[in-house]
Image (cartoon, rainbow, N blue to C red; front, top):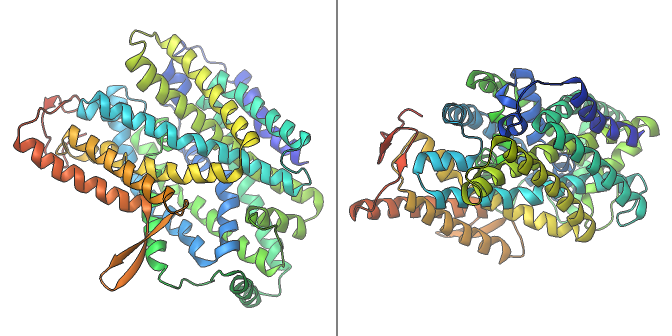
Length: 503
């Protein structure tokens, strides 16, 4: 049953390619952004299905299971991000649609006239997204392990390879349209499956008071805390804010947003996205229910807690269907991320620096090949390297992609930052953020002394503050020495645009 549900998601994309036959010329716009034709419902499914990944569905309750209340930062993080997306994404969409942009780096090239800065943003997005793709396959691997297929065995490797191959073929043929079809299946399966697990787990528990008391006792024995303590409020707030800021500039999120039919469609979809936040909050509670139900996982394998809880509180066949729905959750972000990486590489590396005269058909062919290589590379990564390596790289990816926010978002509202200042700020943020995370053994938060207090701060947010400071100082200095500014082709003038001026 698990395999049948998982294959359903892949087959829908393949069959949909046969049903949805369009008489259109091959182009990167049609393949990578579905021709910018998604309505409100499809945009809601695609954005929600892209943002709420399979690994998130497993990792957030796993973090609750392991450390307690700190893990609930994911809920305010998604509450913060959707109003932010409501403001930022439609404005970026308007500029992108008007000037034919398809990627964040396209927007940077348009607004600053800097090829070097656009290349830096493109490569950062690609590097930040690649380990994210691998994490989706790791989510599938965790589900297989709970079902009795241990990682590293022939059956598990063959299962991952089969799902990857089906998704590869579907995305190769139809691009983002294939991911959109799977996102509808994901929404239809995941919402009722999560509610069913919550109902079964609470019905099997002695009551909410007992659940929280039992979870608090288990966390105390393992070194976690049900409530925030030991100065973790700074970490909680900075993780929520930093994660929200980073999410809106991830290439796969902007790819899903740019496929909308209009900015109003995108706004309506953003208004409905908090429904996915409610789903995440329920999923996070399952970590506490797993603790109260006495679920035990091997050391360092907390991601198995909720799948084991599902098997414990539901009949075997129903549990397999629920886990299959979680597995389908991996297919949407995997597909969208591979499309985003392929589009970014094709537009901002291949066409910009290798083959400027490539035809639309040739660009689509290159993007298809790159998307296939991304999925094959992620599969090889999962099968050949440690799980912790992918987690560490994804943590760095979040730090890196946040450093592109000034170049991508700030320039959408003001032309004041100098292009070289943005490049210097990006470099400073990348170096500081990488050193802060890697130097402390890949720990997300960094202790900072604020007077007599020591505050835990998300490393990516700290690096962004330094990034913005460098941008400000460098812009003032460069303007003072009259360093040349690039042409803002969106405004049609050279030099700074009026603050909050038209996109």
